Amino acid sequence: MDRPWTVALMFTLLWMQVNCTTGTTSKLCFPSSFMFGVATASYQIEGAWNVSGKGENIWDRYTHTRPERIFDHGTGDVAADSYHQFRQDVRLLKELGVRFYRFSMSWSRILPTGLTNEVNPDGIRYYKELIEELHKNGIEPLVTMYHWDLPQSLQDLGGWTNPVIADYFVDYAKVLLDNFGDRVKFWLTFNEPLSFCHDGYGGSDAPGDRATGMEDYLCGHTVLRAHAAVYRMFQRDYNHRITDLMGITLDMAWIEPASTSAEDKEAAEITRQFFFGWFPHPIFSKQGDYPPVMRKRIDEMSKRQNFTRSRLPHFTKEEVKMLRGACDFLGLNHYTTYLAKRVQRPLSPIPSFDDDMGVQLSQKADWPKSNSTWLKVVPWGLRKTLNWIKGTYGNPPVFITENGISLEPGLRDPRRINYIDGYLRALHAALTKDKCNVYGYTYWSLIDNFEWTRGYSERFGLYEVDYSSKQRVRTARQSAEYYSSVATTKCLPDKVSGYKL
Ligand code: GBH
Image (cartoon, rainbow, N blue to C red; front, side, top):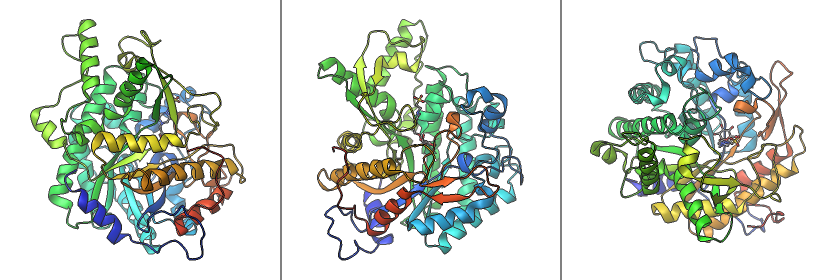
């Protein structure tokens, strides 16, 4: 947090908007400068996987060579075809009345080899046209540089486990800032390193079949070094307007102790540090480095397992300095809550991330369900998450970059309205009662899309995508109307949702 005041200034002055519409009786209004938007990611919506010069990325390779790993054997080859249909997308954004659109750029569309020896003019043109279309409609782009689609050529070098990838990420980021820096004010380096390091290098996401307890930590290490280097470059060479901001998006589910026992309370805090603190601690804490509990547990376990050095790498003094404060705001993705229970020996391989953590997670049977096994509806978890971040890192500026629910296909989706309404009430309480420093909210997702290993079986969109039509026709769900009213009035309707805060 080198300049928290800039963040406040930027959000309040630059994107000031009309107040709540007059005549509303709602007491639950957000500040006039609070921003509502929606999000997507390149691989999940663009399609056009091998046209106009795009190179292969790890999700292309994974879905093509390991179809059995994807629930419905789906691929992102066409997806919602946003590469060709982006004008439709912008029309929806306009219709919703949102202030910004969060999308990601595809590394291998811009640099087909992953490296800067070849810049694909069609890739640059595509994102320039999208940004131009957004600006014409009064919508600010919020750009994620990396949302999981690593060029395959770089995976062939070991991907994020290879420290050199940090340098290549800096080169890629420079191309983005050189080409789009004049028209994009608002950047995110990474989307959810926990997900793509833990599930990609230790679980069943692409690249797949890697070594948990080892490669996931190496991945995290490279990502943090890459993030710091890009942030410092941005600060030094590109931050011409006071309003230019760069953050990182981290995912944090709320972790509640499974019981009131001291053991389970401790287990919950260990989980928060492993699942979340892993990334913000080096950036937002005063000490730098990884959370002390991660450092201690993994160092000790490594020793006991006969490793000469800890499986959790060390930062140099220089890197600690570079990382500390390397962010203008924290992007938060929050969807759900888990219960943590201390266990002596979790049912996990040794070594592994889960074994290092030593906790068993569950969810309450009576929490309302979604169409994703992991996602239960627990709005109060968002309020607790925001308060934990406030307490742990000194109330840094937070921007909610994702929150959403998957449901069955269909245009009538009262459960989605209820979900958004419940989480927004929790957010409102965190803002007004607890004084958490939150500047914006992003619904995931604008449209249905390719949901990674769940293929097309899970739908998060405010707009339904008809995958059988050539144009991938998008149709508004009821929730689009609800969200549009919130985004434009900045107030929640009076009807109190069924969920307890
Ligand atoms: C986000 O991650 C992603 O940023 C986005 O691309 C995605 O579409 C969206 O969620 C909806 O899923 O299957 O039990 O192993 C959210 C965090 C972390 C949630 C990994 C699912 C897998 C749980 N995700 N997690 S499990």
